[in-house]
Length: 281
Ligand SMILES: Cc1ncc(COP(=O)(O)O)c(C=O)c1O
Image (cartoon, rainbow, N blue to C red; front, side, top):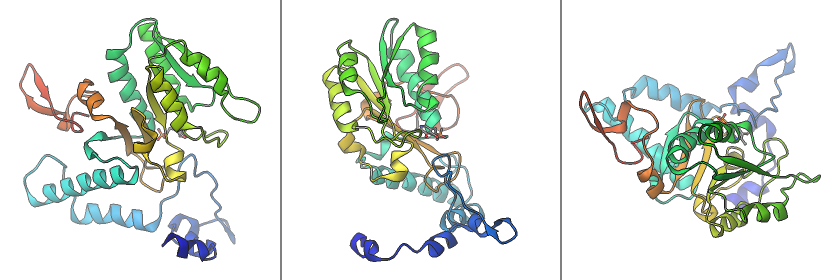
């Protein structure tokens, strides 16, 4: 299928016609041209129709009811989790946690794993090319817990200084968190090698894959990080849905992030038992 697709000419008009918003004009006779997909992509008709179809035919609260609509809505939700897991090369769909966006996925890790596992003086290694969603949660955690932050420098060609990275690893960081594709420079970082080096140094790795999952085939299994995040709205999906992938044993050890909803197995007036992963989150 890919070979056949590659031999077809790039049919701009056919592709444009799949995005209803591109049918509007910015001035009379001037069609809308949208070049801000790295910030958020436009939504193709098939996505808009799927959302409308859900509200017209299936709408119910997931994991709450035992009536037919609730069961269908729950199955749609869980089937999306399985398909997303397969899409990013994850064999255990329970390792896919839905959040609001990539930002919330990183905040979830900082607030749960970070708060419980990191101690005063611990080092987090970031890079100088991070989106602030992968800077501020660690700055907040560092201020709260007395952590140290260090940043891999970026050279004039927009690449990470990997000699400096090796030196930072020799300082024994607990976590290395970096982008797989820079939203500023477009740089694709050598994530497989950097992750392996971090593991050899005893650090866990969080990948900010918010730009690479929309742009490149992505295999989280091969990348082998401990945490990875991305979101739907940059890849033709709706606003308000994000993904955290984390190794199951990490998710099981992490405390819940927010209370309420489907995150309980049992609840009383004074206590609760957290649900199994991924529902605990
Ligand atoms: C590299 C990168 N990380 C994180 C984010 C934040 O993504 P979200 O809007 O899903 O929170 C962005 C958004 O521009 C980004 O480009």
